Amino acid sequence: MAAPSSNTCGLTERSIRERVPPLLTDLYQVTMAYAYWRTGRHQEPAVFELFFRNNPFGGGFTLFAGMQDCLLFLRSFHFTDEDVEFLRSVLPPATDPAFFQFLRGLDCSGVTLRAIPEGTVVFARVPLMEVAGPLAVVQLLETSLLCLVNYASLVCSNAARFRLAAGPKRKLLELGLRRAQGPDGGLTASRYTHIGGFDFTSNVQAGLQYGVPVAGTMAHSYVTSFTSLEEVLPKTLVAVNGDSTPVDIILLTKGWLSRVCELLGSQPGKIHEGELAAFLSYAIAYPQNFLPVIDSFSVGCSGLLNFCAVALALCELDYKPLGVRLDSGDLCRQSLEVRRVFRLCSKHFCVSAFDSLTIVGTNNITEQSMVELNEKENEIDVVGVGTHLVTCTQQPSLGCVYKLVEVRASPRMKISEDPEKSTVPGRKAVYRLIDAEGHAFLDLVCLVAEAPPEAGVSVSCYPLSCDTSCVSVIPAQVICLRQDMFTKGQVTQPLCSATETRAKVQSSLHTLHPRHKRLQEPDSYTVALSEKLHTLVTEIREGSSNNSNFLLAN
Image 1 (cartoon, one colour):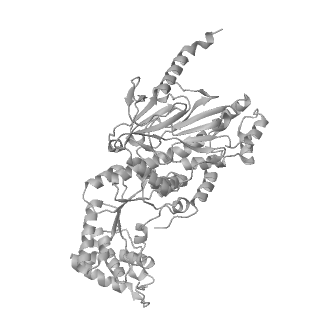
Image 2 (cartoon, one colour):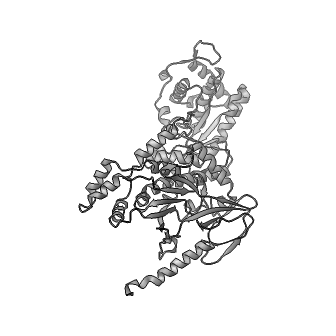
Image 3 (cartoon, helix red, strand yellow):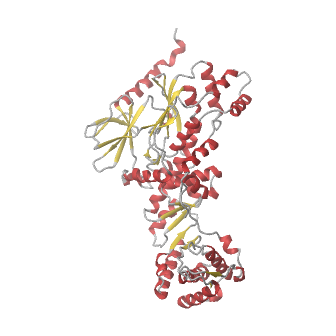
């Protein structure tokens, strides 16, 4: 496992500038900004909110991720001369040239961002992020912010579900880079699956850029590239104990192979020489990191025997082999047999290192197969997951949206024929109510000017899952979820490493009752509006209906 880099923050910020320039946006953001500017409304104070409408994967929760990248994006936001010239070439010729000068001077010095901290458990319809500032600027930010939050939160939540399915003790290795949607998707996945609960990644760049612990084994191609022991070079290895005399590792391994075959009653004629050569060659290169894949031919007839022989030879020279990887067939059954052989070798040959060898399982693992793995007897210590983790095959998008809620201190609301697509107006505060057992049981969305709820005091509110009914609850504890994150061009909260955010995720998940964390048919978590906010929504709806005949007015 490689050590995390100490310069991850600087690398991350440079990456954001390169990956998310201001032109990584939809064209209509620019044309709307021009229309605001043309009518003199571009400096009007406006507020947008970012939220999603349904928890992903049919689950009961979501993890909020991507916040740090959003902050770095805001801090570096500005249009270059090249950006402006390109916009000049794609916007209609009638566009006022002065608008391009306006764009060249834009930055986020007038933008304020308040948000729930990254790594927090969040729920549908709760505003995760509030972006306030000049109307044209905060409009231009929409697509980029959505892009940074949508996939990060989705894949982080997916990783958390895999972690819940695996249980707390089993190690998880993310190895989805080759199956990801492009290089950026692969790098983002490696970062946020670690934050969501995975222990390691195979992605070397993620180790450099984000400090994610890196791990790996070997591919079948390495094993099948060898055919004969004649290909093993060098053929010697020096013992750890200080004796500088080279030992013929091939001869030593052959001796151990004969003893292993005798112990297990195996047929030497079925052992694949090329596989043994591959194992020996790798062990000579990395005698302290020997963990081969053993199913290139036959686990029981060749791979396991070859591993034991090479590993016993390494142990004789005072090295410590790590273990094996299984990548096909019935992983549970094979792991039991592999562990049985390890224990037998440990006892018979008095080699205690065989008691702690690691068994890695990889074979197109899904969330369901992870659940089934826990239901069967097995000896798998580490599970590697790729395709179904990083591509989020159960649900390809979280569906975050970015909606206007206030202009010139006046609340704004989208009223849709589809109630799910209606928005909640006004600037807000968000509070998490905790019960006497320390579990979160309700998120309360209030107008920002309202007095916050108090512990031990009854709170009346309107759950979003109900049309009109009011409920009263008494929290044992109240947590304000929103924090000031960005003000006057500056990030106002410390930027956390992936490892620090990962710890926050586990702490936040711990506050959630198990019934909300069930992978199948979880209980719905309650999100509610305060009485004043519910009244505002009702008044705007009624006012919209009453004003629908404005064309008939004098």
